[in-house]
Image 1 (cartoon, helix red, strand yellow):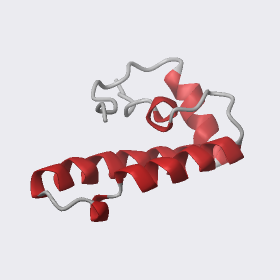
Image 2 (image 1 turned 90 degrees about the horizontal axis):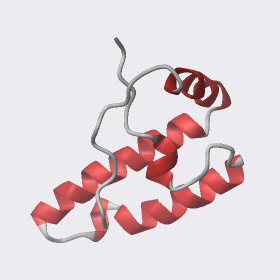
Image 3 (image 1 turned 180 degrees about the vertical axis):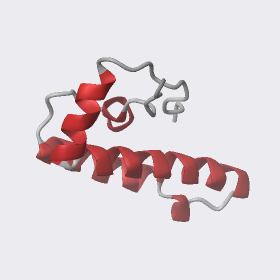
Length: 88
């Protein structure tokens, strides 16, 4: 049984019917907020790298119409892995 990654809509903070402009705007805001190069503390930098990677993956999926549609079709029938975004 296939497990899906954490919800990309939740990671980016957009609705499932969000337009690409909304997805792009949310992505840009999150990248500025969680970019690991803006952090000096090594421990916090690792956390930000993980967060940044999740944001990147979510954007890549939602900005590609074909991949987004495939995800939406799969998400209605497959259980989801735990491990969504961390508070911050």
